[in-house]
Length: 239
Image 1 (cartoon, rainbow, N blue to C red):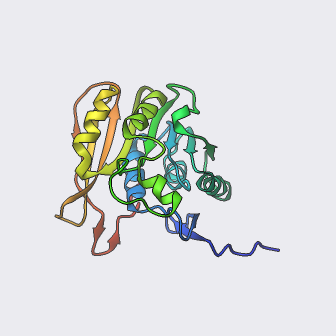
Image 2 (cartoon, one colour):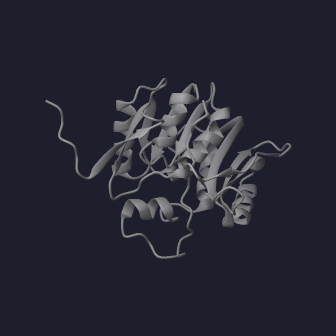
Image 3 (cartoon, rainbow, N blue to C red):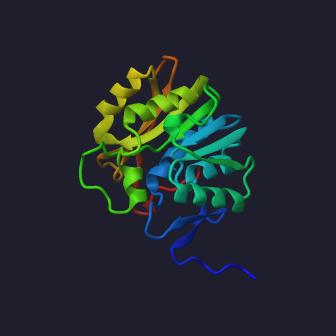
């Protein structure tokens, strides 16, 4: 007998039905920023040991495991409910390798230091004390720097990074100076960069960063639109 659907969850198509992603109906749900970050990181994924810090329900980790041909994918999530969803999503989707889900606080660095070639993160984007908190605890923790500040988050990413590896992040465009200053403070150099515009020819809404421990030339990718006539940004064409 099949399980009854949970009215508090939805199981949605991901990658046009290649996978299914279960999410809470009223809790934290992924949006275009996760797809943008996955697409930005995919070129660096083949053969990489990948770590997703703050994985939520596992959407980015699953896309990388499905399409990126990595050697390993580990997803770390603090919130028990989201970590449980990520674990179920990893179990029900056929990826090679399977996504390993770890329920833990990234501040405790529940990973082997310098063990990952690719670190991916969609960190909270509102500094503590800025704006009203969402009444939903999952959304509040995902959006505001409650459990960890941006400098602490970057330091955790840096600690996981293997020599020659990359840290890929997505963050609001209006916090560019803050992001670059804190990244420099932990010894990171910007090596690849992309602007996500609100619409074609519009204003930057999100920025995608590729930081490395080693300095080198900066590559600026073409702008991408979050919302266009055909709808929101999708992962199509990124394999």
